[in-house]
Image (cartoon, rainbow over all chains, first blue to last red; front, side, top):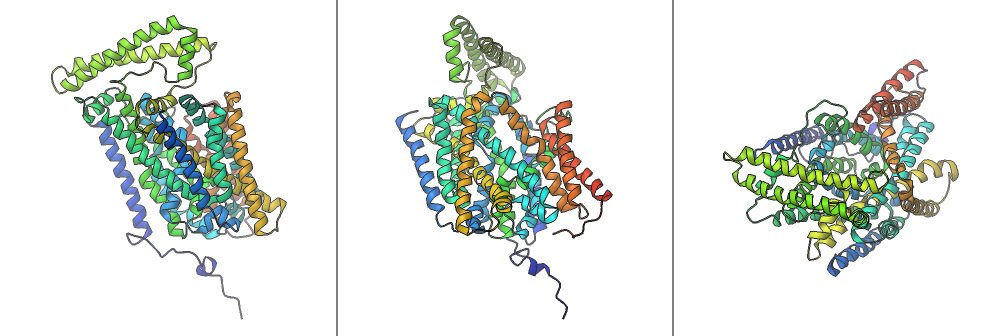
Length: 52
Length: 564
């Protein structure tokens, strides 16, 4: 009998790609981080230019 | 420093060593010792990543930088959140799935043994020398401020860190980092609170920020495309992005922190945690420096912040010093009155004349300081005096904080130093053991043997750092060379990892040739142009990637498909 090809799961049994802690999927989490970083930069720009 | 301050500082040092030893018990194998048995939660690994990155001189130097030049340094961190996202998507899963101890181990799986050996050697060379500077730089400032000798300060920082890292390994590193980050955050809020509380009654925080904006201290977004300017929006976003990619993705002192995550998700989250917190944290540290700047409008400020240099002036040039001091005090008084008058009338018709009066007085303060600097240079036989910037914040802490708070904030500076040193000792020992000892010295040995030798390597790297720090005063400008040394090939190492992940057809030959070409390109750019250092990473990574692709395409196809 031919040997089974090594599957992703067999090569990386500890992998937990499916376990996403919040927001459903990793791309959404990454998107949230990028949006947050852009928002922080916008706030910093406001802080920098604010007429105190 | 009062007795209470010394008690607080002494308690911190004793408690952190005891805590580190207690948390680090139970190591049986090098996987325990180097990767905390891969059982760390995201928040602990994330705080450790943050603590390893923030060194004492970052903490002291950044506040001093904000005091003298304002908050433009914040741009340095703008690319970091985006780099964290890219690393979480690319390198972190590769490292995690390959079950490696070091980042360079992955390069052998993907390319060949010599690429692994060269990149690991570059890490050991750069980080090994830099760890001595990490120890020396804050020690020289603290020794002056605390009145300790330099060797005593170096041994207090280095010795206590070695004690718990040698015994407890990465588990001690991470858990002490967690506590130390807590202390650092507490210290940041404390300093902001005290600086605000000590403003005059009729001068609000808003008035302080208004005055700071007059001198450009609040300018963060410099949109200039001038490549020689160090901190612009673009150098921060692009150069800072590449720097963060190479530091967090290819430097073992960082990689080892998130490789200890319990799962891939925990490792990713530890980096994303930093993406959220790093910029706000640096903002608060810089804001502290700006508030200290405003604070010293209303309180006596020394003409020269370094007490040792001030004493030399008093002893060697008392008449000149008295004249400059009189000029400085007059200007300081005028600036204080001008600041209060402008803050009061800034929305009325007197705003513009008041602004001009304030800026003129501020310029006079700067000119008096510059004159004192020139006087110091003349008694140093033409050599520039040591940078005064790093002495501003420790002098403020020791001179202005009361009731044990000075001891606590000095403990924060110790915590920042020790958290960097601990991660660096541990990662240097890991690369030495896994990338060299286990491959070239003892391929087969018991867990007990490898664990004992790992502890010896940790102790040796700690001792080497102390030795470099003790000799650093005699090395002079070599310190700057060491600091620049790492930036010469950080980007190049990043280029090799980018080839590994993004170019399936790249070969070991291509990667190795690209690495050499990248380092040569950065050396040429640094020698022949005045391009700011943040761009070196872009040049290095780009050259490695381009040369690596070309050489791979020109040579024979790889016999083994990529490991990923």
